[in-house]
Image (tube, rainbow, N blue to C red):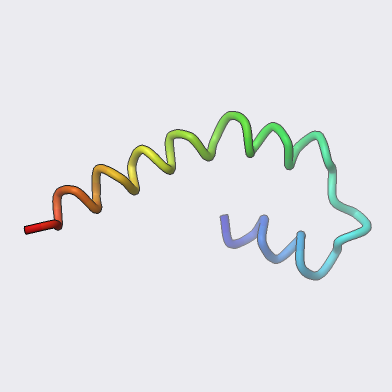
Length: 44
């Protein structure tokens, strides 16, 4: 994820929009689920 952030921030005009959209649709939902479960496991 850090690499993608660097490309987005520093090489903006070379960003592959299809790759970005694919990442949003296919990789963010599992990350949100993981983050939510991690947060719930740490709550008192």
